[in-house]
Image (cartoon, rainbow, N blue to C red; front, top):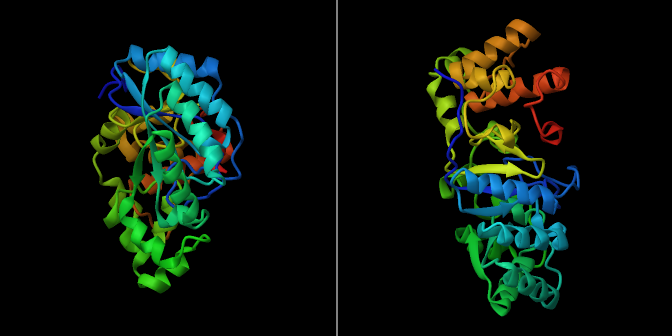
Length: 328
């Protein structure tokens, strides 16, 4: 199997920041209040948009973290996308910032003039654990007044959250008390969640685990397909391309367009060429990695554990384990 080669980008997004007021239990990127407040600047945004366009993608979404925590910087990013000829499918938000409808209308109006037409509004029990649903309602009202479309994700949870009340946040224990003890376990049946990032710690206690031997029996193609998938890619504020759904792995944006340079990404090379068996073998052989005796949800769970082990001890040797804040 040859080197991973990322030549054509199909559809994806730009991560403006990893800082967020919430620490949602399903967050693939481990965003939260503990993360750096770094934010995508206009020069980096211009380089990212030009690179994405050069590799075949003409429209992106913008997410975080929470992009609206720095509204003036978000506006500058949207304006930069317009200057670069990059369409914006939507901007994601959790509505935590919407404390006044009139102020939200003013900001949304400026964003609409810059080219924003749609807001993806996050709606789930994970978000409601930190954000009163009234802010979501207020932001929907503000969008209507500002002429911005709302993409509610996921509308199916509105009835559940309404039943508990819109005036304050509600933790998962309240949802389980109202709807039954299997409520959390059933959420992935109601909308798609990738069991990576923080979702691993949230759902690991609720699903059967597998031995390392069972996981290593998986063929290498599963990792190679994920790494090569550009149908939902992301590039973050540091100019790092995140391969597939493999949060915590980073490829320099300048290395897109052909085979990855020889020796620069040894962990990604192992995953691409030999799957989880390759990464596991490298970690055990070179660094004395020992798996947990309790087992793992999946090959993604084992991969996450190996990468955390390596990042803690050998981050200087494997700069592809980035951003550092993902592993805190």
